[in-house]
Image (cartoon, rainbow, N blue to C red):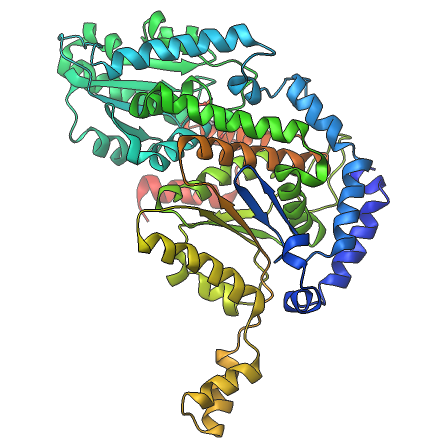
Length: 529
Ligand code: F6P
C-alpha cells in the first residue's frame, strides 16, 4: 500500500471531507469572526488567504498530521540537498541551486551564469555582429514546454522593463508561427536561440531547420552558424546541427525542463531585461527558497498553499483548479502553471510502484482576472460543479483602474463564497419593482449557490523580484503536493509515449495494431474526406 494510504491522517481527512462537503462556506464565516486571522498567512509582503476554503481547525490539524506522518520536512531537505528526488530517473532536481548564492554545484552554476552574462552583454551592447557585419537586433527563441513557457511568462510579466533587442518566441510546429515571427525580421539582424534540454524535441528541431534555411537563403550557408545559439544539455548534438561550440550554453542535467527558467534557457529574457533584473528575479526565488527550507511547516507559505490544494484535489476530489491572475502582465501564468502542475503531478504511480488511490493533479486552467469575469465566471456562479480558484492580486498599480481591478478580485471571491439565496433573490427582485408572481418565477434563475472555494494570494507589486518569488512559490507548492501523494513530480514518461506515437506516424509506418479510428483519420488527411 502506498505511504499516504498507510497514514491514520488519510482516512480521517476523507471522513472530514465528507462531513465538510455538507457545510456552506458562508456558515464558517457566520460562526467565526476570527476566521480570516485563523486561516491566512503572511510572509515578506505576501498574504495567503485560505479562509474561503472548505477547512476548519480540525482539517488543518489533520493536514499537519499528514505532514508529520509523511515527513515533509525530510522531503524538503532532500530536495534542497540534491538527493535523487527524481527517483525514477535517479536524478536530483536542483533548480534551487540555480538561484542559490553557493552550495551544491556552485562551480557549474557559476560557469553557466558567466556564459549567459557574456552573451547578454554583447547582445545588449549591440556588439554581436552577424555574418554580414551588421548588428543583431532580433532574437527568436525556438523551444517548447519548459524551454518556452517560463521565459515567455517572465517576458510578458516584465514587459515594462524591456530595453534590449526584439525577442520573439516560437513553440508551435504550425508553420504559420515561425512565418509570423519572421515577418518583420531580416536575416542579417536576426539570431535564433535553439532552446532544448534534450536537443531531440521534434517540434523545436523542425523549426530550427526552417530557420536555418531562411538564414541560408538570406546570408549564404557559410554565415548561418554565426546567427545560431543553443541552450542545451547536449552541446554535441547542437554542434552537429551547425551551432558553433562557443554559441552553445550548457543546461545541467539536474535542472528539469519545467524548472529551467532560472537557467540559460532565459537567454532571450535576460537580453530583453538585462542581467540586473534577471538577477533580481533569481534573488526573489532564492528568498522564497530560504523561507521554504527554514520556516516551520504551519508558517510556511508554499507548504500551506500546497496543503490547501492537496485538500481540494486529493482530499475532496475536486477536479479542477482555476488560476486567475488579476494582472494583465501575468496573463500567461495559467499556461505556465499547466505544465508546472500537470506535467509534475498529473501521474498515478506512487513511489512503491502502486497506483495512487487518491486523485492527483487537478485540471489546471484559467485566464486573466477581470477578462474572465465576462466569460466563464458565469459557470462559477451558477454551474453544477465546485470549482476551486486562485485569485492572484499584485498590490500597487498606476491609477484608479488598478484599484478597481484589485477590488473586483475581492468582490468575486466574496460573492462566489457567499452566494445569493432564493429568498435574497426574491427580495432583490421585488425591490426592483417586480410583482410577487414575476419575482417567484425569476428567483431560481437569479439565485447563486455560492460555496465556491478560493484562495487569494495578495502579492507585492509585480517586479522581477516578486515574479521570482511567485514562480518559486508555485514550484514548491507543487513539490509539497507531489510529496504527500508519493509520486515523482520530476519525470514525464506519459509525454514520452505520445512522442513515440507521433514518431511512428511521421515515419509513415503505422503500427500493426493501429486502431481503426487512427487509420481512418490518417486516410482522411491524406486522401481527403
Ligand atoms: O513535454 C515533454 C518535455 O520533455 C518537457 O518536459 C520539456 O519541457 C519539453 O518537452 C521540451 O523539452 P526539451 O527542452 O528537451 O526540448
